[in-house]
Image (tube, rainbow, N blue to C red; front, side):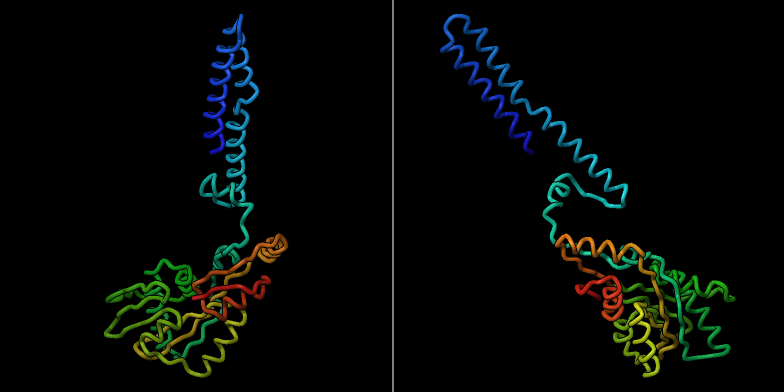
Length: 265
């Protein structure tokens, strides 16, 4: 941008210099005019600026890419020194992005539990969400018969709704349960609070208005996250966590990495 302004200005000054010497130069006016015009161009030539600046920006963007930082354009890189706040996603940025089921609390047992595990596996197998993949991975060693849900609907920010054998099955968060008026028993509520305080994500499995199971999923915090956040804070940069997870889990993760600012759900 600077070079785009600088070049026309220098060219204009050199032309004015040439014209001035042609008028006032007396003898050898042409030679003097050419000499001074070229001198202005050589001395004020923006070649170094025009070449060095894009090169420096290109190298900077390349180094950022090597460290997993995608810089949108040169202007963003030039403005980076003015950054005073950074918003970080939780899953895959602060955490490793490899969620795994740690606990499942079933409200049923025996053959019914086995049948429901197969239904849960069939439903979550149709979802591409990382939490769904964690659930299917935890159930992959159990025996599964082929089950095809009558319908399958993914609801952004809540979970999935599926139909099977004249029942409606829900797999998702507490918002989804509220939409379908599914109540959570007190003993499950107490366990949920414990899991959330451990920074675990809790999802629910329900049939019609009956809660069948509560599932806890953990995503390990990266070893480098706390130090990186501390380094940013030491530079006077405010750091925020933005996540679609519940408030309690988001708060637990924020506390573990030394943050007070977070926005959940």
